[in-house]
Amino acid sequence: MAQAFDATAQQAQLTERATEALALAKQLGADAAEVGASVDQGLGVSVRLGEVETVELSRDQGIAVTLYVGKRKGSASSTDASSASIRATVEKALAIARYTGEDPAAGLAEAELMATHLPDLKVHYPWALSTDEAIDLALRCEQAGREVSGIHQSEGASLSSGEGVRVYANSHGFLGTQKGSSHSLSCMLIAQDEQGMQRDYDYTSARNPQQLRHPEEVGREAAARTLRRLGARRPPTGTFPVLFDPSLASGLIGHLMGALAGGALYREASFLCDRLGSPLFPDWFGLEERPLEVGATASSPFDAEGVQTRSNRFIDQGEVASYMLSAYSARRLGMQSTGNAGGARNMRLLAPLTPREELLTQMGRGIWVTELMGQGVNGVTGDYSRGAAGFWIENGEVQYPIEEFTIASNLNKMFAGLSGVGSDTDTRGSIHTGSWLIDAMTVAGS
Image (cartoon, rainbow, N blue to C red):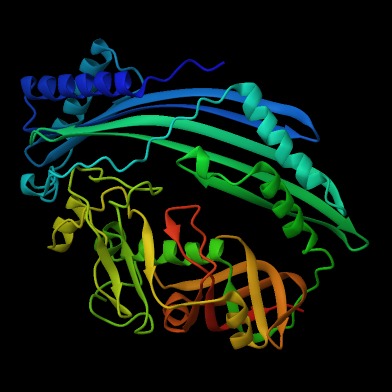
């Protein structure tokens, strides 16, 4: 049985430790300092073929200190939050700062940008789940999938449940705390026919365990996804429209945000350098983040530098409307922080949505991609090439599963060629999107 996690007590203790570290940094001669501290506790179980494979109880904590001496920066961290360890960490960071080179862009985010609106965003839902209860849920999930006719084997089901607290404080006087939780259940199954074996999976994830799908539903969906892949063949080589499944369309948004990130931009390692105000998508498409959305996966009232988060419109009527900047990258680019130290939070589309069946009809003849393999995406040039699996579409209808082919294009061309977005929105992660229909990509198959 896991030790009870008292989030409120942990919050108070981390606040005390962060305050102690800031005071010590000032006392030892730092001009400015910032401290991040966190503690997390979780339970994870996995089962396979009706037997328990692993049970893991985890508890992690850490404190990281960054100090500034003039324009010199030093950072150090520790997993020990005792007073002696905090002193050693601060002293180490200070020693590093005194030997590093000066960086004109170094320093805390501007004091006037610090968060002052700190609402409760309802992201902490503890789950009083015993190990036996967690095992039972995982077993029910796998059993439901294995009972489906045609399922040959199982790679198991896994359940994880965790909660934690984070604290960020700096010498501007800002101190922000947030409690959070995350829970998930997944299942992966194997089916076999005369052509060989296929596998697929399904999962459910939420901050609030009451919003998880039923274990049996996850298992049966994993089985259905696995069985539909049997009899796969290679598609023809050519240029075809490609429909990206929602879980893969979120990856395209991830590549976009990587190219809009300040770190890539000031290093001139992005295909979107100097593209503010220029068209990238069709004019009916928009994309924004909503970090203050109540209960959402990545909600937070402040970023990793204490800056107030806000809704940011990154793509507006098809044009690049904003970059994604921390205080440091903003200074390097001669701009201002967008409250995105630590990344974007809760990405949401602003676009008309179309049922997937209509997108397939619009496609006519092409490929519906449900799995991608490899890492063939170049963030500097935008070149895109991935191994894939999915389904061949003819006359707007699924004909048969396909595998062992690649799809290739360039992200600039793909974004401009976005023909439609599906209403089959996947809400399991921080990026909510439906399927994406790209008008043409090069397919290398048989």
